[in-house]
Length: 325
Image (cartoon, rainbow, N blue to C red; front, top):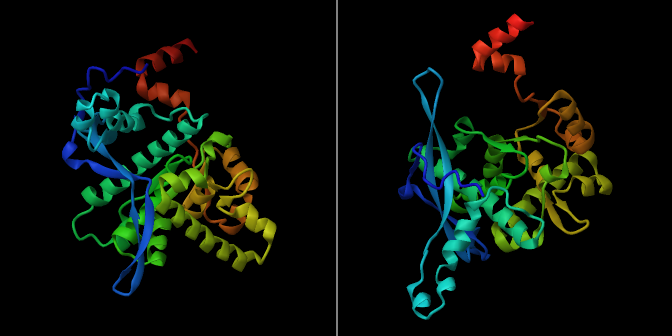
């Protein structure tokens, strides 16, 4: 087990006063808002996302950055009524259930229960971070039309891509924006990096699971896909094979959401992490998207050469190696 936080961390500071409420399950309903039809999400259950600030000092520059981490906690950790009835395990079930969300990063997803926990975790971290930024970082009264000037949310692989419909939900349902305005902002606020071409980095989620856990987000994804396929038809005509290939919603072997496609449609930029990798991304994995959005695709080589790293991180060792050579 990974017990590195058993005794706490001197660099980690909890801020329970800034906790975010994260919702799951439930249903959606439409309502009239002064003649405008809008949608609200009525969740079944909530957990708290409690922020912890970890101090990250800079190197000889007098600066300290803050890395904000999140712990899941129950909104009502202990049910005294159930405890007094003798069902001790059930009395703390909500606490255990919530804590599991952030207990292990990337939980094993080979079982249906593991897949559900994985999706809960991904949404938990993304929703907490996006809402924390909008609520805490932006000044009161900030013009959300200028949001792309303040932030770019970096999507490293497909794990955080559920952030796309989450930002749309917040802008449309909670901030009252029109759909087209919110989508224009969203497309400027995300950038997608594909780190590997392996299937585990190109996630798909069944619409059954997504609809059960995040019903409003699935509705938003459906509309994004409908609008996107209209754009594909306008550009390439009624090419049914292309439409099936590019649809964010996959049909085989089961109806699912292809998160890499959603990230590509929503992202302002899409990149691989090496020249060859980026070329394969354009030519093989997302070639039809590259035909539609050639200006989106770019390359950003990741990493550092071992020689440069040793020279900067350990000058004495670098000098010894130089002498030996």
